[in-house]
Amino acid sequence: MLDLGADVNEVYPGFGTPLETIARKFTFSDSTLRPFYDVLLERPDIDLLAPSEGGEPVVVRLRKWYAKRGELVERIEAKLTEQGIPRRGACKLSASSSRCWHSHRHTLP
Image (cartoon, rainbow, N blue to C red):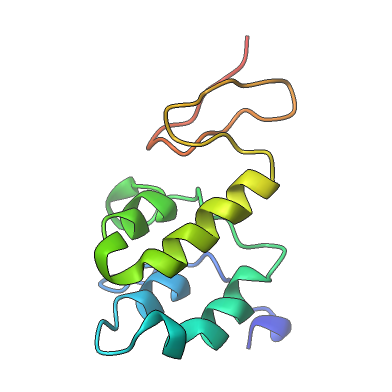
């Protein structure tokens, strides 16, 4: 579906993004859901800082589930670091990175 144009960042009312929808199935472990995470996290168009339900970035919402989704959260944080996006609380922004992991976006002068 994604290869045919489905939006990996689409927010569905009551569910959130596809990644959030999968992650909130607490019946399954991270290891069981790993193949689904792989498909979504490998998408070049996934935006983990995009707003989800209520306006919070996807990464902020997923961090709230760390106790049950630790592996997923760590993978997301690693992906953001690889993309040059600073960790929460480490807002050392440059012209190449105007976004951080907070629930807000910075603008450069």
